[in-house]
Length: 467
Image: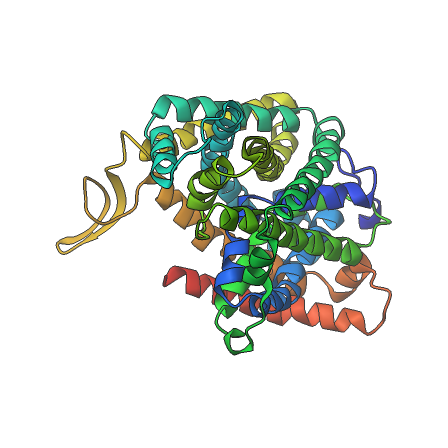
């Protein structure tokens, strides 16, 4: 009976659409501003090898777990976990893990929309030639002027949320699938254009050596960093992959499909590094990570090399697309759940949730300027305070939401999903969904899902908490 379930929301036309969707969910700002820098800092090729090991042992088993739960349940993550738990004779409270993931995804989207909105501003600024010949101080001042202006941030935050809601409201086929069929190939093309351009800068080999020079003595230096990024980069733990799995064709191989997504996500991250760091070196600058790389270092580099205005515009369009494909995957689980629960139209549910995310996101907007002194989770000599204005310690609103989601909710969600697939679902159910062709492969995958991946997530969870 389970095999004949069909999602009320629709279905992907083919496994390749799922690959585009899952890759779009996985490929985000972290692929561009974090992974390449981590590779260079933790031993180049040594880090890549360790990262790939962690992808296979931790990231992919969790992704397999989410996908097979979604396809088996054919509903939103909350209802898939609930129905499958009841079929397995387990407590329906397992659905609370998906509910936690859904909330985490909405919270992430609330601040992700603000950060992604910066790329909209920079597309216009780069296209106008604002950064032509700019210095590092000038680029830093320009970025500071953006983040200190709540009206500009609100404008771009609002526009990006509208773009996200527009795709989701149109449905799985007319919205998600049609949009992803355009956005993901365009992302790959723009990335290849940047890679081709970086080869003409005269610093391509310098960037190549920064990323891939193998330092065997540093093989273990980046183990925790590799494990953490392998978990976070695949967009697991919030139910996005699970809800995409619910729309996956029955005949598609989950194992081969998930492996393809992992390979594509890694290739995008490495290609981004090969495309960007030669440009950084051509501008006579040092590599950096985080927002500083995208919104300060790279604008300086693009502003001081040939055809930089054009290539810089291409780059920020690329950033926008990567953020857009990730953001729609964050909103979809909650939309699917509320459509099932309330029987209201997808457009109505999307509008309500997008407005909710926008309102929470305004806390992030204000945390960069007028409410920068509003601090949460303050540990002082006279005790702990949940909130205190102007405290020296603590975190602002943006940092608090980021900490809650990335260091607590995501690891717990990923752990719950992989434990459910490995220990609650019957072994034959997992074997039936995975349908691995090689008879000796399933025991290894099942063992990774039951033992290795949960241990990996626990290590990531503890390591992130004690940072």
